[in-house]
Amino acid sequence: MINAERLLDTFLRYVQIDSESGHEKVMGETLVRDVKALGLEPITDKAGETFGSDGFNVFFRFPGTLPGDPFVLSAHMDTVVPGKGIRPFIEDGVIQSGPDTILGGDDKSGICGILEAITTILEKGLPHRTAEVVFSIGEEGGMRGAKAFDMGQLKSKRAFVLDSSGDVGKVIVGAPGQIKIFADVVGKRAHAGLAPEQGISAIQVAAKGIAKMNLLRIDEETTCNIGTIKAEYATNIVPDRVSLIAEVRSRNFDKLNAQAAHIKDCLQAACDEAGAKLEIELRTNYVSYKVDEESDTVKMVLDAAKRVGVKGFTTLGGGGSDANIFNRNGIEAVVLGTGMTKVHTTEETLKVENLNNIAELAFQLLTAE
Image 1: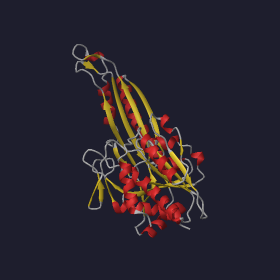
Image 2: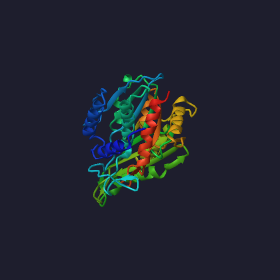
Image 3: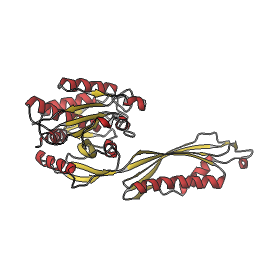
Image 4: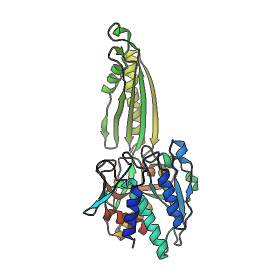
């Protein structure tokens, strides 16, 4: 039913618009123009000002003629780095980019799927459900656009977030929460050659704390990783400060907090033993969610997948998305696979077949009676 040639042209055009997180303005302006061209009224906000982006969220309503409660269709317009100068090409039905950039299917495949479904419905004058569409900024690195979005504008109680790797038909019904940990171990500076015993090595203290930590895979629901350790001193100086950045993820709220507390306790014990000081912040980026697999939200997607002719299945995710934010605000949300592979790498690809299927899936969700 969808126009595959138009869909592909739109996708290739969109991925060539630079929109790394924090620099989504041009992409947002493009979406505003394209939505207006459909005869719909996009609404923008000042979400970018909350985290230093030049962009804004784009929101619009697609009023329906079929009965049934409204629902949200959502995708994000920002990409990870390196996302400048993307030059896509197609080989054997697979869309890819050059070796120096990502492709940007994460998440412009979701945006294109939603817009193509709406465009098809409008041009054919088909009856459809009411949808509220949210294209967010700043999803990569903490869903900052969704956090700043005014959820009070929404009348929907369920959402479909088109933003996952894996073939179309994949439905993520649960995902972890995340706590970021920012810690500084503060020791005492001294001359390392003349009087090292007068110093307290922040590096040594931090190392002792880290050695006591349970890291990486904690259990089937929980992971923990230290991504940054920074201290730059001359070798003749006992270092008096080292900075660490770590994260904890878990689909269990209690385990999430317990693991974060474990990291803090290990560092604090090492500091207490050495006479050092700990400066630490535990920042909850997002909380976990779990949607009942028997819910109407999940059934709607699985039924739509069947009509598209793809296999629908549910699974649990390992990362956060705007769905975490929707769920936290009382809107039951699941994440849908759009077919992208090797996301966040320069080897990212997307099959044309999956691009077509995600648009067909959005079309089926909108036109189901």
